[in-house]
Length: 112
Image 1: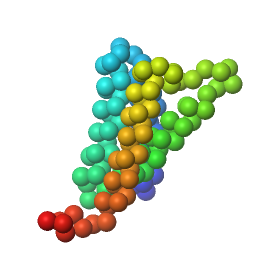
Image 2: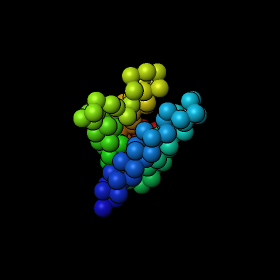
Image 3: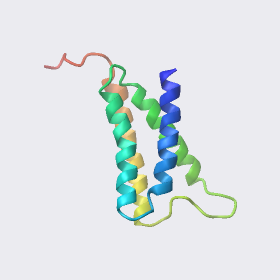
Image 4: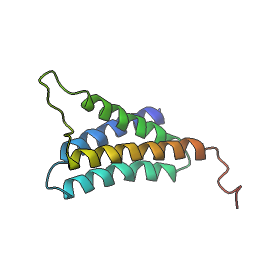
């Protein structure tokens, strides 16, 4: 149930981020990326860090959906600096998901 909630939350944050990333550049982009990264980083600090991977999966699913374009030929993420920075932020979330899956084994203090 937590994974489903995190998946939906990731989709909602991605949609909101994609809608504001072009407004009032660079403030909109910064707010979008801060919101996108704040949730999974918080989830990594909880008792169930693997839920961050579900959040990232929801975020990336929405990103993939909007990158496919529309029948009219337009896109939500443009091929300019703003769009490329938003894509780079999305791909950075993949690293967060990999850390959450690899680091979520439960041995937090074993390496000390």
